[in-house]
Figure 1 (cartoon, rainbow, N blue to C red):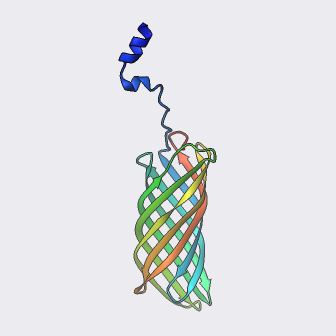
Figure 2 (cartoon, rainbow, N blue to C red):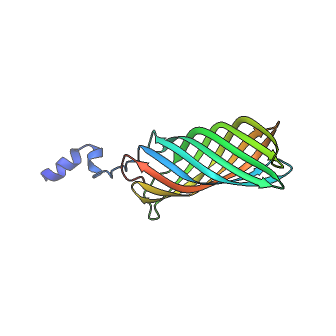
Figure 3 (tube, rainbow, N blue to C red):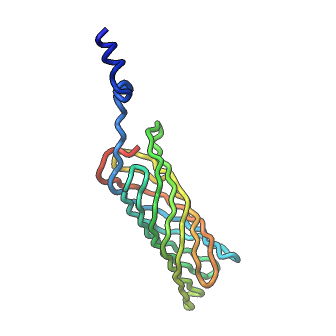
Length: 184
């Protein structure tokens, strides 16, 4: 009888049983990988291949502050385009335990981009402008400190030579996680 009285008189939170521990997230994430860009200037389109790297600081379990840098190049009909970009902003994660070890995310980044266009190997022009990237992706967690960014797809808007370019931006690569415990 005394055990029943103790349970009945205890606070509600004590009756709910042990709480599941909230998984820790890494302090910092470093990404490096391949980047594909489909430049669309309204009249023509060029595919670009290149590299991308990013640094992400996990301010909260679900919020990461990201800084990325990228380089892409593509040539079509003797016109070579080289695109550099630096962007900053939030990345929102949905971290939960799942059998597949997948972590989806969404992002919105702002920054600057620079393009250099070379025609026929001699005539060169360049421009710099404010750009935005928005989209999302999916990480496959391999271990507490290593993941594969299976896909990151963004809409990438740049304003070069007096008109806006609508670019599809796709990346994939490796994520190195430092500090903290297993991200879920």
